[in-house]
Length: 419
Image 1: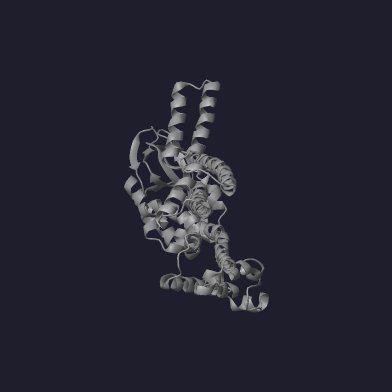
Image 2 (image 1 turned 120 degrees about the vertical axis):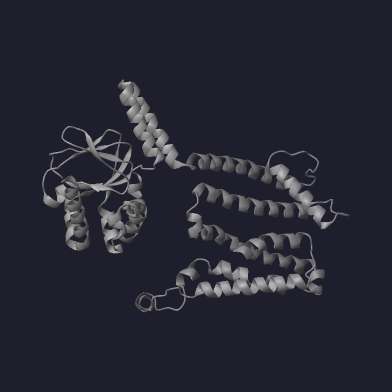
């Protein structure tokens, strides 16, 4: 494709400036021909690596789909017309010289450029608007080059001018015409030039419209997460104003949404994760839970199978300062792991007797002994806490005895500490 782009610039320029075919250009033509022929051969071969699939579904050695689509274009581009219609005799006969225009068939390869770019895995990670603009500007530069070459072919004032001056003047005229500037220092003089100028003006208007539309699309989608959050906050602000929410409660609501945004905890990411196959979903969940795994001691010692299993069961929850996470005496249905923030353990009188920070866990006693909560836990600051429900907890205890041992040891140590 890089050679196709190079040919798109070199071939038209060589034709309009009548550049003689020297040794370097001959070598270049030979190289392009060889590579384009190899391209046809390689694309013609069936590309199925699985031999079983090849035998069952596609016994043919050739890629029939390629012959139905791009084969003709690639074949025409591979024919060395520039070498066939060259030589002293052909250079002197005007009719035969025109046959050299057949080498422009190599420009048909550019038709494959857009599908090729869209298939690129690296470009798929870029904002689609940026990719569209890159493709557009690439073809705009190529089109401007072709327009300049056509103007050179139509220009009557070429006597005494060097090839560089001719091309620069032609490109200058193309750019001023397409951008609707039109200084008037280079103007059409013949009927073909008038017709060509009108076509170029129409293209210039279309170019402006396309660029403006794509730039608007790009700046509108440059940060979709911020746009979604702004729309959500507009709805929240309207709700707070319409329902006359008290200022203190309103401040808490705004604080919550600001925390969600600052920590990128918008749950729309779950929609993306749920669309993935199970294997990819587990890998993504493991990556997202990695900060928690590095903080919790029992996770650090665990084997990879346990980590993959538990990350699938963990559910993140956000608690604001002063929120009660568990209440003494209630039935326990989950245990909790502190990923960010800190919590306090309260006694019966509501006094703090312990603090738990990042990497700590609590609530396992109720699940292990199947008894009510033995203490109240309250958030001291904004907290990101992962919960593990009772059914998942029981599954992990059965499948991973070492997890049961760690939980039991933690429970015994805490009981000794109380006594």
